Amino acid sequence: MKIRGSECPDVFDMKAEPTKNITLRPVEEVDAEFVFQLRSDGTRNRFLSPVGEGVEAQRAWIATYKKREAKGEEYYFAICLPGGEPCGLVRVYAFQEDTFSWGSWVIAPGSPRYVAIESALAVYEFAFGELGLAGARFEVMKGNEGVLRFHRRFGAEYVGEDREQEFFTFSKIQYLETKMRYRRYFSQASQSE
Image 1 (cartoon, rainbow, N blue to C red):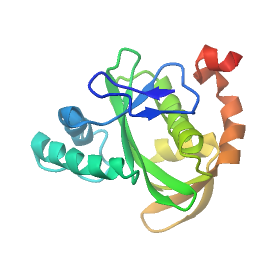
Image 2 (image 1 turned 90 degrees about the horizontal axis):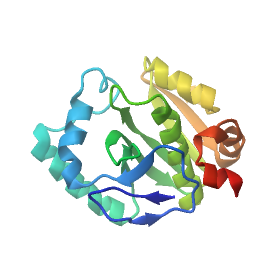
Image 3 (image 1 turned 90 degrees about the vertical axis):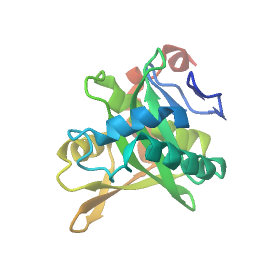
């Protein structure tokens, strides 16, 4: 799988399996307006950290983030439809030993239903396949019922909570078991290999 985009070069040659419809590509400064608009959407940002003041502040944040990406400290992706149009965002970050966290996951209103499942699969393919990590650990804010249901259905293991968050883990082994249930979301070419 290549993480690609019209405005940025292929910077990762993934060993991971491609999903059928979406592509992840690294966020670039030219995405600042899209990122700002999506993260400022009151129906989508209730469970996200606040964004800065305007598109230029977002562009500056992305420029700083690109330095962390270059060091392999975190990855911020645009989730793109087949024509390259971005329809969401997701981050992979907080690496500790052989685990990672992911979040800042937001999908544009009106996006096809498959975007949520395929973007989650693509995140795990990237982290487990390309980065060679062994597990995910992440938190979901209480009240974010749709995302909590999604992770539970996907097979994430609840490991605790505090006043604001529920905590989950998801191992590579769990993912490989879950992946079999979601084979239809991978490209036909990879299914025949």
